[in-house]
Image 1 (spheres, one colour):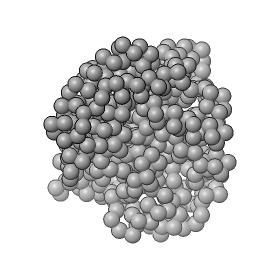
Image 2 (spheres, rainbow, N blue to C red):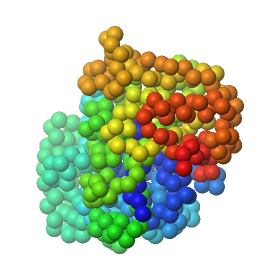
Image 3 (cartoon, rainbow, N blue to C red):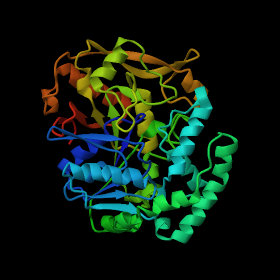
Image 4 (cartoon, one colour):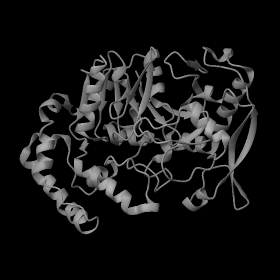
Length: 427
């Protein structure tokens, strides 16, 4: 049985939750695993007409019989974790099968404080973070002054680590940002308040997942953020603080690369991104406003408006290459129902030179101008289609063109938000 990776192939918000949920309806999924990011991510899933949003939790939390795993590569805010769990419990969702890695790093309250004041301090040069402490928590991890989930169960170690982390941060807050110092006792007391509820969930998740694969279980690794937000391979510095590409699954979950059988890239039929940074196909006209309105392009976790643009085949080819994708899952095709002609970016023009692949430097990408090919629209409602043959001919032609120019086969197409609103292209 396979280990399957589902990840974002653009700048996030592609509909990874829908793809994960869809796969779980066709395969018997035993484990759904988050391997990177924190509660700055967000997945929206519609089940029987009811909308659910997950942030820190894997979207598999809604899959009966599946164990949800928050692996070591995730940064965990205990407050956000339990707030999200309680919200699902209030709606009658069973969340008993949740496992958290002992080695996952903890987001403390001071991480979000540093995140917010640093963004304000940067002014016009801000990165557009969510202010939820993700970057500062990862920075502490790399600086080796981070707090792991397991540390919460030893008050002596926890206190020493909080003291070490706040030693520099309090100088920074007081002398640079003109803020009050944070008290060690208050942070320790808050973190200890989560221990009793957290303890039964904590395991060695690397051991758990490797044993599951040894036993022939199906493990689904669910990406957060996306390829173009990868700290190494994205549009740096306008990126997240982790590696949401396929290679990051191995370090983020403690499994070897030979374990992975299938890598699915989720990609919209157009393109969006949240926050600052270059975006070659971004639209500033009525088309952009219509994509935003029809697509409901507002962040699941933050509520921020998403910037909208046409499909970018250069980005798709890049995502396929750096992730070793075996297939794409195309979402939100129905959003394009009303267009007479649909542009697709097939290459970039930079200083008079055509680039068919991703430019090497940040400067080049910042100056990239899209080269478009145009496709006839279908101008009809496809939300009721349930097979590829049901789609209008022009919609079929659009999907086939995207598949050809993106370099990877398209496994399925989303024609609406519902679990049943999916068209299979290739079995």
